[in-house]
Image (tube, rainbow, N blue to C red; front, side, top):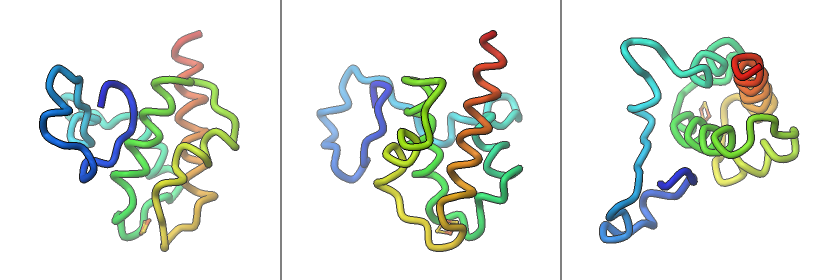
Length: 107
Ligand code: FES
């Protein structure tokens, strides 16, 4: 919401008035997945997928604000999400990969 990751269950409807809202459904455009989604697949960061929407949106908000996050910044950004399948290394690696591709696109 407004470029920041929020817990939708903690946001009251009136709070979204005038805010830009980005949901996981908007990551795919014209049949093309977002680089984060592709990186999650490439790094086997998805098993049951239960945590994946939150992980992706937390990572998207991070990369929108900081295209060159440190590993610590990535871990902090996803710290509100729990994954019981992959552990966190694969997810962190996927976000690093997406960030690297983002920087290469900018350069
Ligand atoms: S992939 Fe299953 S909880 Fe994260």
